[in-house]
Length: 80
Image 1: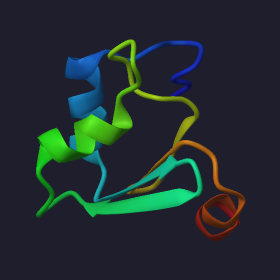
Image 2 (image 1 turned 120 degrees about the horizontal axis):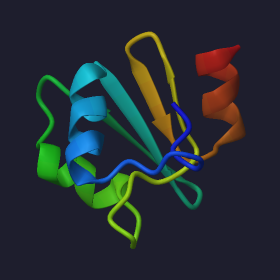
Image 3 (image 1 turned 60 degrees about the vertical axis):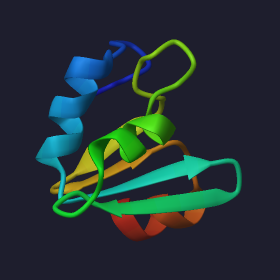
Image 4 (image 1 turned 180 degrees about the vertical axis):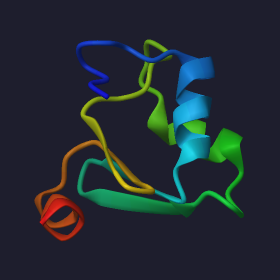
């Protein structure tokens, strides 16, 4: 999935988010982590969607973990 090359709108973003067990959203220096079994989808969408209403980029998935945004430490631990 390349959210930059193929923007995902709200409906597609919900589908992708629901396929993940955990989601890490990077906003500035802050990393928000959501366990999707118990997370409020609207709360996740509020930080995962950009001002255009599309899933923010970069968005990368490995197994059941989805990372939205860039953080070197999260990338290192998730993607090794």
